[in-house]
Length: 213
Figure 1: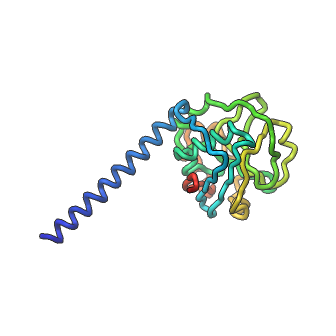
Figure 2: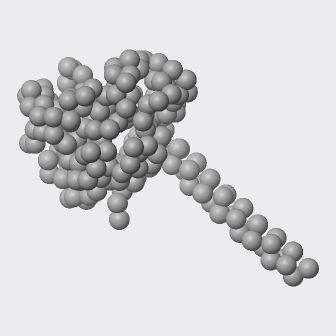
Figure 3: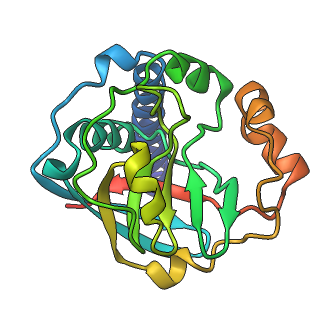
């Protein structure tokens, strides 16, 4: 009987842990659908661990380079936005782009919450990390890219780097590029990872993105 009681107690503890973890996930999901709540100021410098399907990539962020971008990245990472995010646009010698959430509801919530432009203090050199944008003013959102080479031509177009790969650039350059620019961003917006997993099953992705301790 004592062994059965111990087993039952262990099961209850495990179940409680699952409930707590589930609640944390639910809380994060709720926060991600409310961009106005994610406005914490980032530390002056911080590191982000991208645990990808190719290995670990560590990004060192320097807030002074682009404070608005650094704050946005910090809040998104802290709340799990980039977990399961696919590298949906990869061009050898140019860059690897990611940052569309797998849940269409979350993507929709951030669609009308762009960042204001800020000066380009740091250029788009190899290993530097920058938010993507269109040709329109104040159009940076949640998508970003890792520069594979010296892409200085982007510097005058408002692409302000806010961090750089401190570890794992060799990992970043192994990200699967077989699909190039084929994934359709409109379809990703509408269907999220369901579309990408069906049509582009070999895309590499971020398993988890976390603020390093």
